[in-house]
Image (tube, rainbow over all chains, first blue to last red; front, side, top):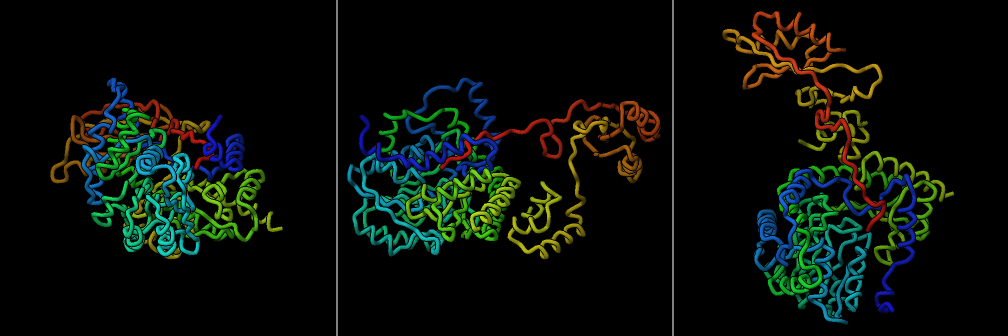
Length: 384
Length: 160
C-alpha cells in the first residue's frame, strides 16, 4: 500500500534506539537537538497577548508583512543583505518546511542534489521523498568536517541541480570563514546550481561572525535560497517558525506549494517571531552560555579519550570513537544501559560516520559534568 | 562584561580549573585576572542567595522601610544615610526620588525585632521626619533568581 520510496526511508536501528531513550527515566541526555533554554519571556508574553487580543486568524500565504519586514530589516542590519519583504521572503513551519518547499519547487523527479555529510537527517530524506538522486559529499574529521573543494568539483561535474549547505553544522558544528566560502562558491558558480543554505544556527557562531552564503556576491545571492528560523538561536523550537529568503521566482514557487499544503503558519508564532527579533540581548546571553559549555565539553572529551575537534558553532560535539572498534549504535546503547547517558550514534548522520557520536551541549553544566564522569567510567569498562 | 565575570556572577563558587575549561584560559592567568578585579573593586564580594523560607528555624522577617529625612547642610543626604546604614539591622539602603528619601531593607528574627528597631533606633533620630514600614510576605525573585519555581523545559530526551 505504501509507496516503495517512502517505505525505504526509515533508519530503523536508530529509531529503535530513540524509542529506548524516550522510554528510560532519569537519563542524562546529550541527545537533544534543541536548546535547553525556554523561549525568552518577552516572546512568550507577546504570544499570550496576541491570543488575548483575539489574533487567531489565517495570515497571508507568505506570512505577516510585519514579520517579513522585520526579517528584511534584521538581515540588512546584521549582514547588509537586502530582501524585498513583498516577494523575496516566505514564512514557513520551521526550516524543515522551507527545505521541503525548496526541494519540491526546484527539483523534478530524478534531478540530482548534493548533500554534505555528516548531515541532518532531513537533507537526504526530503529529496528522496521527491524522487531525486542524492549525491553525498562526505567531509572528513581531519579537515574539520569542512567541504573539500576538489571533492565538491567531482560531484558538480555529475550535473546536480542543487546543493544543500548547512553551517554552522548539525552534527559537527563546522562553519566557514569568508575565504573558505569563496572556495566553495568558486566551484559551484561554474555551473547553474542552486544553493539551499540552511543557516538556522547562524546566531550560535563562536569563532567570528557568521557569513551568509548569499553575501558572497550578487550571483551567489541570486542562486541561494537562504533558510533560517527561530528554533535554535532564539530557543523557539515549539513555535515552528522559520523562513526562506531568495530571488522572487524561487520564493514565489515555494509560496505556491506552501499555499496549497500549509496555507500559512500559525499567526501566534508569527507575532511571537516579530518580538523574537528584538530579543538580541537574550540571544547573546544564550550564545555566551553555549560557548562556555562548548569549551568545557571539547576539553573534557579529549581528556577522557574521545577525540573531538573544536566545533565553531551550533551546540554539538562530534567526537570520534574509532579507537574502540565499535559501531556507534552499540557504543551508544552500552553507554545508555550501563550509565544512563544518551548520545546520538554517528551513523544517524550518514553511513561513513559510524565511528562518531553526536553529543549536544544544550544541557546544564552540572549535567554535562556528570555525563563526562559517567562516560569516563564507561570508557574504562569497555577498554578492559 | 567578560566571560569570567558573567560566570562568577552566576556561580561564585566555581573551582578555578572549571572556570579555565569554560573560558579556554589558563588557571594561573584567571587567578591573576580575578585578583585584579577584586583589587579594583570590580568584584565587590562573593554572595550566596539563600531561600530562608526553606530552612527550618531560620526564618526571618524582612521589611522595606520608607524613610523621610531632613537633609543636612553641605553634606545633603549622605551623612543621614551613613548614620542609618551603619545599623547592623539595615541590609540595604537606597536614596530615591519621589515621596520619601531613603528606602531601607531591614531584617529581624521576627516582627517585634523589626518594630523595636524602627521605634527605638530609627524613628528617634533627629534627622528622621517619618517612616513607613512594609513587611515582606513572600519572595518571588531575588537578585535575578526566581525563588518560588522555575520554568522547566519539557524536551524529549532525544531528537535529531
